[in-house]
Image 1 (cartoon, helix red, strand yellow):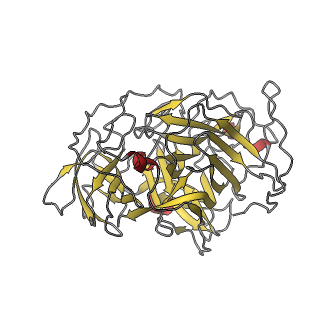
Image 2 (tube, helix red, strand yellow):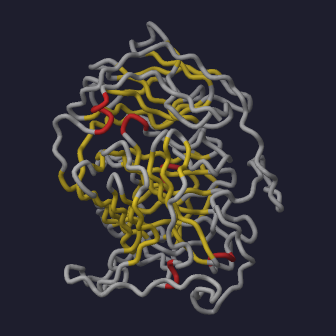
Image 3 (cartoon, one colour):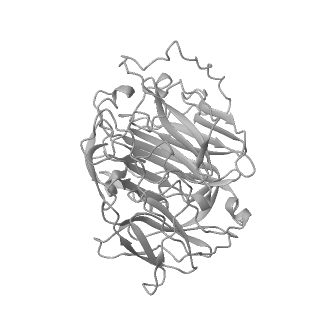
Length: 485
């Protein structure tokens, strides 16, 4: 589909680099030892957090058993979760995201910091659990230029929901091979993935580590304008490194700073057969455990969160008030479904909400919005018209601005694109027993071989390339054990 371009004029240098903020290391952890799972809404640390489900018109979520007990006892203990606010929580000094949606769901965590690789490589690092309960429950990592970021990005190979990828981005995502977990990478330019990003697709996590819900392993992305490297630094505590992606880019990236988003996706993880490929006997939604997030070279940006995460026709108010007043050259950012108009002056005047550039528009899918607002703005009111299949909804509204940005913003009139539904996906062999879209699991870009459950972690098949042995231990590598739940 044609790329929908927002009418925002930018001074060229403003796309890439903040005028005043100097890059510096950024670290963040989800601390705390509550007596029971403590919901985390992003306010501690001023992160942006959105939990999206296919319905999206309330905070309700399909019920699941989330890892950690009601007293925060570690896995395999669980506790019930059935709404978005309780699906992201803290126990035992780290964060959990628990997500279940038969149709499609996504949770995105976004720090108020841009990764800066303008003067050399920068590293984004985090620790995560490695046990996976379904191939239809997976993680990803996006890095997107500030002016092109989406609230809810989704890779172009998925058509089940949302509107696709950003105009430009680096995307790392979890996949599977021969019953084990691997990671792949793609680079987007002008809304389309470019080819030539090759990696080690035959070495799975479980050939190096015993997948665990309790032990969190460090993952890192080393990023420059000309090179991508993603994998497991010091994965065994003995200085050995492994990288699924370690490749130079044939065409350098045209940008040097990016918004960082950690994603958790759920697309009917209980579908029969989706768990056998990862060595599980019961297909179920997963809980991912996160800790120790860091960016080696980061630049802060202004992120003013709204006082509520959702407004719609059934809420008591359709006005969102932000944590502070908009600075110069700020943007209103939100996700929505339906035809949305906004008022920036307390309801005295209304204008169409401005779509962010994204890969098409399906009227029955949530879309990302990004529009300039005047300095001093403190609240925004919303009105909407329902779409073909349900009521309108606005999620995760916030104000964003780059520190010292030299952007010259012009707000041109924007017309709402034609409400052309996206083509139906290819029917899946096994029907989904709800109104959710039935399609083959497009999160997987390679065919899934018929799995055989091994008694030990799956070994690399003899017909596949054999990975090179890990390099000699690095003298500087830490030998400290990984954190545990």
